[in-house]
Image (cartoon, rainbow, N blue to C red; front, side, top):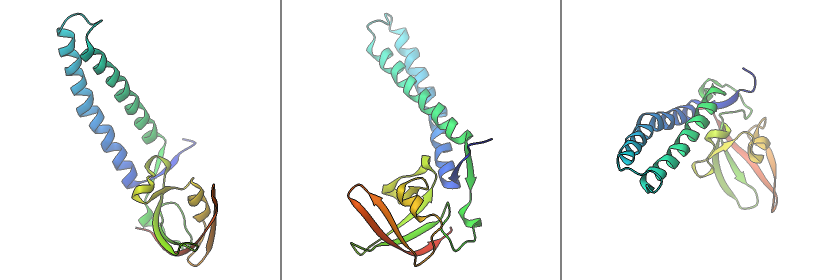
Length: 158
Protein backbone atom coordinates (compact mmCIF):
# COMPACT_ATOMS: atom_id res chain seq x y z
CA UNK A 1 0.00 0.00 0.00
CA UNK A 2 1.33 3.44 -0.87
CA UNK A 3 1.61 6.16 1.75
CA UNK A 4 2.68 3.88 4.59
CA UNK A 5 3.58 5.88 7.70
CA UNK A 6 6.50 4.59 9.78
CA UNK A 7 5.74 3.78 13.41
CA UNK A 8 7.73 2.07 16.17
CA UNK A 9 6.59 -1.23 17.66
CA UNK A 10 5.86 0.53 20.98
CA UNK A 11 3.76 3.17 19.22
CA UNK A 12 1.85 0.54 17.26
CA UNK A 13 1.21 -1.51 20.43
CA UNK A 14 0.01 1.59 22.35
CA UNK A 15 -2.45 2.51 19.58
CA UNK A 16 -3.63 -1.12 19.35
CA UNK A 17 -4.16 -1.18 23.16
CA UNK A 18 -6.21 2.04 23.04
CA UNK A 19 -8.26 0.62 20.17
CA UNK A 20 -8.90 -2.65 22.06
CA UNK A 21 -9.96 -0.67 25.16
CA UNK A 22 -12.41 1.43 23.13
CA UNK A 23 -13.90 -1.56 21.31
CA UNK A 24 -14.05 -4.09 24.16
CA UNK A 25 -14.82 -1.81 27.11
CA UNK A 26 -16.12 1.65 26.20
CA UNK A 27 -18.27 0.54 23.25
CA UNK A 28 -19.91 -2.18 25.37
CA UNK A 29 -20.46 0.17 28.35
CA UNK A 30 -22.11 2.71 26.03
CA UNK A 31 -24.43 0.06 24.56
CA UNK A 32 -25.58 -0.78 28.10
CA UNK A 33 -25.97 2.91 29.07
CA UNK A 34 -27.99 3.65 25.93
CA UNK A 35 -30.21 0.59 26.45
CA UNK A 36 -30.86 1.60 30.09
CA UNK A 37 -31.60 5.20 29.07
CA UNK A 38 -34.07 3.98 26.40
CA UNK A 39 -35.98 2.08 29.06
CA UNK A 40 -36.60 5.36 30.90
CA UNK A 41 -39.06 6.32 28.19
CA UNK A 42 -39.34 9.64 26.35
CA UNK A 43 -36.04 10.09 24.47
CA UNK A 44 -36.62 13.76 23.57
CA UNK A 45 -36.01 14.92 27.14
CA UNK A 46 -33.70 12.14 28.26
CA UNK A 47 -30.31 13.75 29.07
CA UNK A 48 -28.62 10.43 29.87
CA UNK A 49 -29.61 9.03 26.47
CA UNK A 50 -28.39 12.10 24.57
CA UNK A 51 -25.12 12.26 26.52
CA UNK A 52 -24.48 8.55 25.88
CA UNK A 53 -25.29 8.89 22.16
CA UNK A 54 -22.93 11.88 21.90
CA UNK A 55 -20.15 9.97 23.67
CA UNK A 56 -20.84 7.00 21.40
CA UNK A 57 -20.21 9.24 18.38
CA UNK A 58 -16.90 10.41 19.85
CA UNK A 59 -15.80 6.84 20.68
CA UNK A 60 -16.77 5.53 17.21
CA UNK A 61 -14.86 8.44 15.61
CA UNK A 62 -11.75 7.65 17.64
CA UNK A 63 -12.05 3.93 16.80
CA UNK A 64 -12.17 4.81 13.08
CA UNK A 65 -9.21 7.18 13.46
CA UNK A 66 -7.10 4.54 15.26
CA UNK A 67 -8.03 1.83 12.74
CA UNK A 68 -6.94 4.17 9.95
CA UNK A 69 -3.60 4.87 11.64
CA UNK A 70 -2.91 1.16 12.13
CA UNK A 71 -3.96 0.29 8.57
CA UNK A 72 -1.56 2.86 7.09
CA UNK A 73 1.35 2.14 9.44
CA UNK A 74 4.54 0.25 8.75
CA UNK A 75 6.23 -0.98 11.93
CA UNK A 76 9.95 -0.18 12.04
CA UNK A 77 12.07 -1.90 14.70
CA UNK A 78 14.90 0.48 15.68
CA UNK A 79 16.90 -2.34 17.30
CA UNK A 80 17.46 -3.81 13.80
CA UNK A 81 19.04 -0.56 12.57
CA UNK A 82 22.82 -0.42 12.33
CA UNK A 83 23.78 3.10 11.34
CA UNK A 84 26.08 5.91 12.41
CA UNK A 85 23.56 8.37 11.03
CA UNK A 86 20.28 9.39 12.62
CA UNK A 87 17.32 7.62 11.02
CA UNK A 88 13.76 6.84 12.06
CA UNK A 89 13.64 5.15 15.48
CA UNK A 90 16.93 6.59 16.74
CA UNK A 91 17.20 7.77 20.33
CA UNK A 92 19.27 10.93 20.09
CA UNK A 93 20.90 12.96 22.85
CA UNK A 94 21.51 16.55 21.79
CA UNK A 95 23.06 19.57 23.47
CA UNK A 96 21.42 22.97 23.07
CA UNK A 97 24.50 25.10 22.39
CA UNK A 98 22.87 28.33 23.64
CA UNK A 99 21.53 27.02 26.96
CA UNK A 100 24.04 24.20 27.54
CA UNK A 101 21.02 21.95 28.18
CA UNK A 102 21.11 18.29 27.11
CA UNK A 103 17.91 16.54 26.01
CA UNK A 104 17.17 13.07 24.67
CA UNK A 105 14.50 12.37 22.07
CA UNK A 106 13.37 9.30 20.19
CA UNK A 107 12.43 9.93 16.56
CA UNK A 108 9.06 8.28 15.95
CA UNK A 109 5.99 8.39 13.71
CA UNK A 110 3.51 11.25 13.91
CA UNK A 111 0.68 9.36 15.67
CA UNK A 112 2.97 8.39 18.56
CA UNK A 113 4.90 11.64 18.97
CA UNK A 114 4.65 13.22 22.42
CA UNK A 115 7.19 15.91 23.31
CA UNK A 116 6.53 15.47 27.05
CA UNK A 117 7.58 11.81 26.78
CA UNK A 118 10.64 12.62 24.66
CA UNK A 119 9.05 11.29 21.46
CA UNK A 120 9.36 13.60 18.45
CA UNK A 121 7.98 13.07 14.98
CA UNK A 122 10.40 12.51 12.11
CA UNK A 123 8.31 15.21 10.37
CA UNK A 124 8.79 17.84 13.10
CA UNK A 125 11.29 20.66 12.46
CA UNK A 126 13.76 19.12 14.94
CA UNK A 127 13.16 15.60 13.62
CA UNK A 128 13.77 16.71 10.02
CA UNK A 129 16.93 18.59 11.06
CA UNK A 130 18.33 15.54 12.90
CA UNK A 131 17.70 12.89 10.20
CA UNK A 132 20.96 12.01 8.44
CA UNK A 133 23.24 13.64 11.03
CA UNK A 134 26.02 11.88 12.98
CA UNK A 135 27.55 12.25 16.46
CA UNK A 136 29.37 15.58 16.72
CA UNK A 137 27.33 17.24 13.95
CA UNK A 138 25.75 20.61 14.60
CA UNK A 139 22.10 21.06 13.77
CA UNK A 140 20.25 24.35 13.31
CA UNK A 141 16.49 24.32 13.83
CA UNK A 142 14.46 27.28 12.65
CA UNK A 143 12.05 28.19 15.44
CA UNK A 144 9.54 31.06 15.74
CA UNK A 145 11.80 32.80 18.27
CA UNK A 146 14.90 32.36 16.10
CA UNK A 147 17.31 29.61 15.19
CA UNK A 148 18.28 27.06 17.82
CA UNK A 149 21.64 25.30 17.54
CA UNK A 150 22.18 21.77 18.78
CA UNK A 151 25.11 19.39 18.78
CA UNK A 152 24.46 15.67 18.41
CA UNK A 153 26.05 13.97 21.43
CA UNK A 154 24.93 10.36 20.98
CA UNK A 155 22.77 8.12 18.82
CA UNK A 156 21.30 4.81 19.99
CA UNK A 157 18.99 2.25 18.42
CA UNK A 158 17.15 0.30 21.06
